[in-house]
Image 1 (cartoon, rainbow, N blue to C red):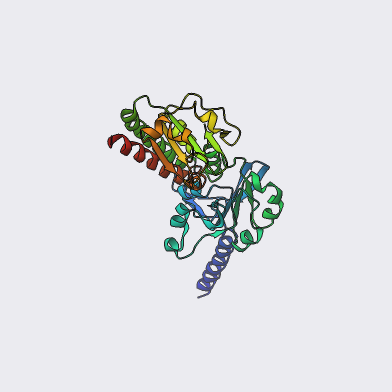
Image 2: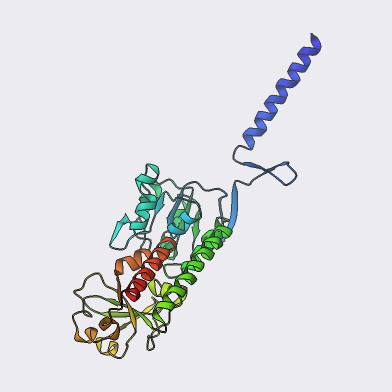
Length: 329
């Protein structure tokens, strides 16, 4: 009996020690190594961002994104609780693509918005979302100190026009580079396939991207839709395309447009009541006469063509429009 009591006491103490040890390791998940033994997985990681080193959760569960990277986060398996990817015309509304991805029908709760990420976002909205990690872009540089008081904040060094660099950076921070590369590979394979189909249908025909407003005309050479057309689909750029300013295009005049005669034109315009389509110069262009005009809105360009899910959608839409026009001849 005395022996049994001693052994019970030893067993009881052992349980207490074990429970204490488990409590100390509660925030450190475990995984099996190659030899079948249990290795502790760190609860945090140290990464390099635009401002230096940052300690972030190893497995963030509540990401607030005000860097413009929400579509890329979704591809990498993270559903942000707050986003700055809002409609360019309505900074309190999700873009159409993100309405589908982050709307209430997907999980019973809608992601919060903090305003358009190209502006300084709503700090109170970020705080109410209770994130455990925040991604902030160059536009939020003046409020980083405030964001850091809410949660660890990663400064993304790439903004609106640097899709590939931004995507790669986000993937590296979250240790999801392989997932990013797989998506890019699939996207580029689709682009190559569509290039072949379009080239077969349009031959050596050249392309131009023109945006028309009620006040001016802009010709794009890169960024957004131009990045999709000239970089991804590798379609030939019309001779005379002006060298772009930092935003990717150049403001031009109707007179200059008269000597810029592309075979195919992707026209970005939110209304037919614009300075371009009301002119006789426009009606005399080769692409207009041959019905090689492919329309989209400026709003769609800025809401979709600068982000992963939107780029793929816009690319497929443009390819479909071009091929339909060629087949209807």
